[in-house]
Length: 565
Ligand code: GLY
Image 1 (tube, rainbow, N blue to C red):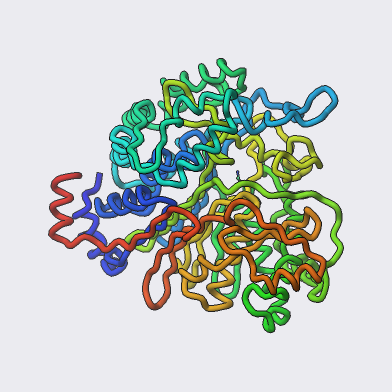
Image 2: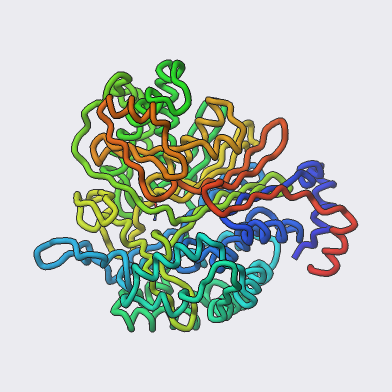
């Protein structure tokens, strides 16, 4: 392995010492994740090393969404090139289109959400492993040490985690083994996870193969057998993460580097930016979050959600018309349909709202490489099933499929054949980890949880930054809203800060139904690089932490090299 000191010398020889020495940053959904990134970057790791270590840490300290039993997407900007790693879960080989329907073809309550049948084959460990194989510089085992220490020694449970855990205890009561593992989480007290620590230690020592073919795999299969779940040893052994072409969308003098299917997020965010750009004249007169502004965005949102429901799914199983959906003439046609004065009629489809418990972190390293990573168990604490003896939660990502084509699932999200269940298929996602690049330099690293509200939240922050010129902190903190075609004319607002009374009144008069939902719209973790420098912000809606990370001085670096590498 190359030493950190040697990499510094090498970067100076290559004339890249200035880039190497620049300030790094992390925006993480909790402080443990941020501190892990800082540690790894100080040890000489790059953004991908830091991302891997942070993802494992959040699997311990952010159990509602951080995970090794789920999946996600990583968008990377590395040495001037874009990459996209898809480590989304897959449907088990025994899965079938109608597996959540009864004899009368009615959806069986909760079956795709709670318990063993709700889980897709986990992708996180393989994704992190493949990221490390391609870009990692520090030893794999070192990257798991912060997570192992936190699982062994415990971490202090934050207020909101105890609250989410309490809700989950009620939801899963008598249905899963969640309480055996998580009932003891008490705000302000240490919470230890010895079984998880042992699992992470095995993965540290033996790599991803341990999770997919070793003792952990056996424990997952045994858990599935206990609860009549579908995931088998074959499913685990066959799982692969996929390096895909990132979606690159030109926007103004930037390039948006983002996810392609099986996430809908990249196409949707690109359409949002493209459609707004085509109607800029309408927006000129509109103040931020005024009734006119909200209405114009709602007009755009409903068209994007109509496309999402009809066209998007796993590209290995369905032909996704990505180029057509982003073509200039198609966007021009869609933009021309927008009615700036009144709510335009739209065809009857029924998207809905999902809970917010996915999670995202953004990292920029000292060399200017960036990682934008969103991963998830789907809803908070996933299926509620903990792998007995291994101490980690399994996802309930199967609910992201269209469990009955044309019929909304438990959270109101619809889809058609493109997102129907098939063995080995990846379920459609809305996760939108993204990087904005200008002149080959990273300018913004951004993402958020929030299910179907993810890309509208990312879009609003980008708009706040680049159209309203807000500082990053204000752009992230500003109140957000959401519309997704149906429920018809419904505008969702967040308890964090609803739209003003006056704006709500004006929107009601236009025919909108204002809906105050129970959870906040997202938990944005963003890093912005401008001519003024680098800034990182964790959304005030969550318990996140952002850090700017100065390079360690050369002398300290030498000591670190000597002591740790
Ligand atoms: N499970 C949320 C998403 O992937 O969009």
